[in-house]
Length: 252
Image (tube, rainbow, N blue to C red; front, side, top):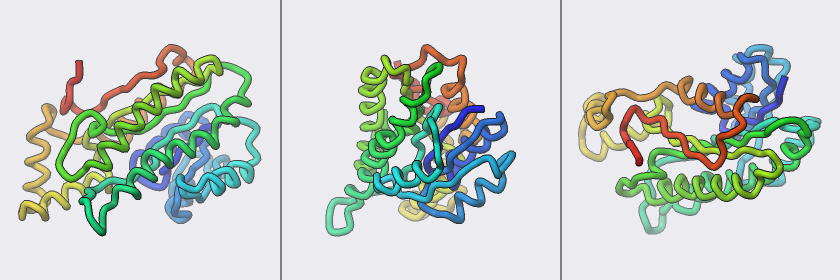
């Protein structure tokens, strides 16, 4: 049995990743800001008593460190940095730039730095870091400058750390999902619908018409890809970005 930490584990992709790991008989440390959501995730996992919860904001390195110590961990085998927020930002008094960058990019940096000592304490085999970025790291849309910049920044962080920690046998990779059927995606569709004065279904149909497979991915599909990258047999992928977007973007 291995031990993995998943941030943003209270819902969506993070919850699906935790469920996949638990179903494969792994131990999961669930980290997030909202205790009730984390406990709800934990209760639905296979062998719920095996898993632990850390209530902490990824922007608060002291809370993360305290939570890790409270878990009594000897080591970590892998970390999935999934926590993040979305939405627009408009320059001015209510600009969300600082908040989005702080959570998505700086928060990931702080979380992983707090977890690194526990990864290095695992003496056997390879350890893994998987960062959940976004298709918007690779393309831009209006009014999402902070989100696009934060997710692109995660790819730079991933590549730097893949080189930096290779000798520690820590493999660092990123996943860039396109549309995934989560609450965040639904909120994004609704916000667009409100802007263009369309119904949710009309806005959804319009967005899916630009995707070759004309569908969203399911959180479980992303979780399966993450699980592959975390696997003991995966010893050669590092510094790589894997796209899962139903053909919405086909980079060279």
